[in-house]
Image (cartoon, rainbow, N blue to C red):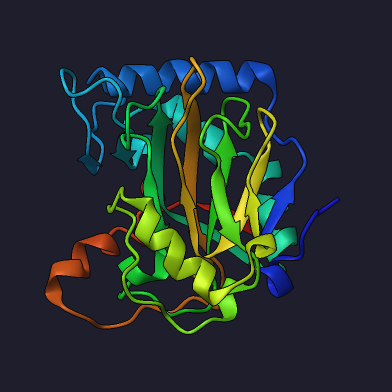
Length: 255
């Protein structure tokens, strides 16, 4: 049962979708990608962490599903696609981007991700029909740096001064709290194999991981039949040029 309604609240939580065997295989494949071994023969779209970098920093790799058939198969499961379609009331679910977000035990602000809404980085997409699924590959607790969501913030006008890449959360927290009551901020604590979904307009962030083990999430950005591509600056054209390529942007549900 959904704990929150995506349409009304901008976020919802799904029951467990992925089993322990599938998760273990996916994590092993992601470890290969982190180490620079791409078993499919294809590199990721981008790496924001490389072997030898600060081990306390967040490991973020874009489109890891290109690098390994195990990861591709994991995010294209039929029951995952049907669950996303049901939660978003969609006739079609298409994945257009994915990210590995591996958060080790933090040192200082190393594990912080600033408040933002995904749409602020997607000027090439319309505001409708865009969502993000966050798959927990490890148990996500209050201490492991879970994603924080502001309920109903998908209805807000845009706020200035917020940015994913700004790790100083103190000032950003004030901006958020000046706009809403603290009880509207919820934690995305998840069991292993569970999934959260949020609108591209929902404000969210995450803090440090104080547990010994890393917090591992596989992020899937997807769209439905309402999403429209917007003509914008040429520097963004590479983001959507692979939409017709099923290997890069697979349809995982269609009614």
